[in-house]
Amino acid sequence: MEMIEQSDPISAHQTNAGKDRLRAFGIITLNSMFAQKDASGVLRMAIEDLLADELAVVSSFGADSAVLLHMVSKIDPNLPILFLQTGRHFPQTLAYVKTLSKRLGLANVRLLAPDSDELVRFDPDEDLWKSDPNACCHIRKIVPLDKALGGFGGWVSGRKRYQTEERGALSHFELTSDNRIKVNPLAYWEGADIAAYKKTHDLPEHPLFAEGFASIGCAPCTSAVTNGENPRSGRWRGLNKAECGIHFDVNRRISPAMNKAELTLFRDGEFVADPWGKWVEGTAPVLARYVHVPLVEFVVNRAAYLASLHPLGLLVGAGDDVMEVASDLGRFSSIAVEFPAFTDGRGYSSARLLAERLGYKGELRAVGDVLADQIPLMRRCGVNAFVVSHAATRKALEKGVPGRIDVFMQPAGGDEIPVGTRAFVRRAPNFTVSTP
Ligand code: SF4
Image 1 (cartoon, rainbow, N blue to C red):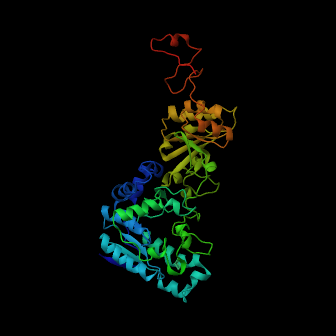
Image 2: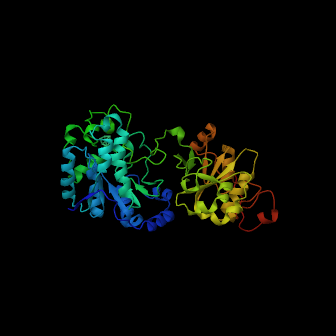
Image 3: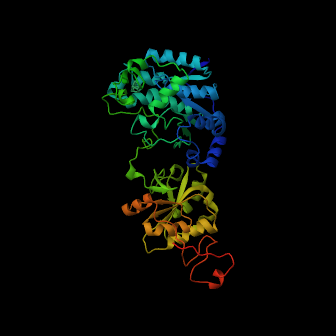
C-alpha cells in the first residue's frame, strides 16, 4: 500500500475532456440513469466512463467508510483516496486508515495536511474548534481539500440522504459551482443497507463503532450516540453546526430537504423536486447554473452563456421570439415557456415553434398560470413538464386528470386532423375520429 503525505497540489490533470463529456451527458440525464440503490453502477460509470483518471474519493475513514472504499477497491484500487489528516483525529482513526487500506488493497491513499504556518498563526493552542469551529474546519479541512482537488474534475463522497435534513435531497451526481462533478453513490442507502453490506463482505469496523460512535470525525467534535439518536447527532454536539463545510457550494447550501408541497414540478406522471432555481438579475453568466435565463438576457450575453459548462435553462416570456435562439437550443437542458394568464395564448405558439418547427427535444415546461384545463392543450403543443402551484390543479394531476383531448379544431404536431372542418380530409380512407 502506498501512502503519500500530501500538502502540495496534486500534479495537474487535464480536466477538459471530463468537462466535455459532462456537457454530453448532462447531470440531469445522469441522475435518471441509475436505480436509486445501484451504488456500484454509479461508481463504475464515474470511474470508468465519466471522469476516468480525473476522479478522487474523499473518505473520512469513519464508521461507514468501509462500504464505499470496498466498492472502489473492486473497480480500481489505484484510484486516489483523499483523507483529510486534520491533526485532531482519534488515534483509532489513524490506525484504521492503515488497516482498512491494507485489507482492501487500496494503493493510492493520500493524506492531506493543513498548512503548518496557518495552524501556528490561527490555532496555536489547538483550541480553535471551541471558539470558532467553522474557522477550524476551514483551515484543517476546506483549504487542504480545495488545494488537492485542483487536479481533479470530480470527487466521490459517501454521503447519504438519511443522515441529516440538509442531505435529504442528495442526488447521485451534482455539478458544483467550480465545474466539478460530485458523485454520491450511496445517496439513497439507508442504515440497514450499510450494515447488510458490511456483513456480507465481512468488512472491518472502525474500532470506535462498537462504542457507540456512529459517525466519526475529529476527536474534539465527535461523541458517541445513544440508541435512536441520529447517527450524525454526535458531531459538533451542542454547537450550531452540522457540516464541516467541504460539501457547501458557493451559496453555503447543500442539497436541501423537501416536503411534498415543495415538489412543484409535474413530470412523467408525478410531482418531483425541481432541480432548477430562480435566475437572479445581475448574476454573472459564468455563475448561472440550474436556472432558466430570460431569453433577452441570454441574447445580450450569448457568448458568455455558451462558454459556460453549467447546465442552463431558458425562460421564454410571452412576448419573446424563440427564433432568436433557434441555433442555440442544444445549449439548454430545459426550456420554460411562460403562460402569464388563462386568456393569453402566446405560450402555446412558442411551445409549438420550439417542439415542432425547431425540433427541441429536451424538457419543455410550462410556468406561470398553469391550470388543469390548459394542460391537455399544452401537451398537444409539446409541453412535457408543468410547474404547478394551483391546489386544485395539483390534485387533478395527482388523480391522473385531465387527460388528452381527442376532438379539436386546430391541428398540432403535424399528424392531427381537425374535427368539424376540412370535410374532405375526414373522408380520407384511413381517417377515424376518437371521442372523449
Ligand atoms: S471537526 Fe472540529 S477539530 Fe476537526 S477541523 Fe472541524 S472544528 Fe476542527
